[in-house]
Amino acid sequence: FMSALATILYIFEFPLPGTGLQFDLSDLPVIITGSMFGIVPAVLVALIKNIAHLFFLTRNAGLAGEIANFAFAVLMSVPVSFFKGKNRYQDIGIAFLTVLFTTLIMGFFNYYVTFPLYGMSKVGAWEIINSIYTPFNLIKGSLLMLFFTLSRPYLDRLIRK
Figure 1 (cartoon, helix red, strand yellow):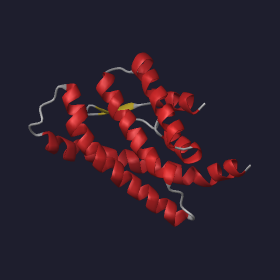
Figure 2 (cartoon, one colour):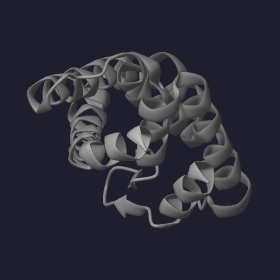
Figure 3 (cartoon, one colour):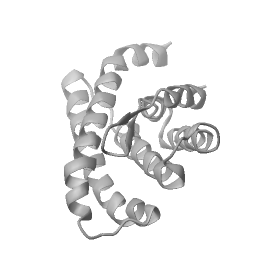
Figure 4 (spheres, one colour):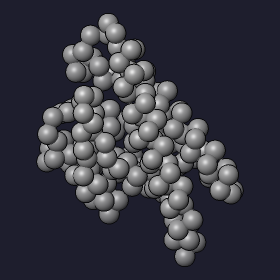
């Protein structure tokens, strides 16, 4: 179910002009799955949604874009899979650290994995990462964690039932 929901959300991606990046909320079901069921199911949801997107929905990014999206989704779900806040403030702290952790790791991932897969030169790569990719990851990660943190009380009630 969560893979299907993630794939449906992936359909509603929209391009950010001048960046070559696409914004979507398809990672939210991955994060929720990680929180509720653990990292392995979250990785499977991310994998299925990216395979479905690659073969049925993608318009331009191809394999390199899907690999980057998969890495981002998994990185966002790792902290919430292992750390549960005891109150709203701890949840916000975990969300904040998750976004910073993911953004930092994705900078290196883009430099060493995504850029070479796109055939992009590493000359000026850090400038591109810091001016385009880092702000994008901070904003996308923050929005995802905002939606996740707001939905957390409802998810906790589902788990208790």
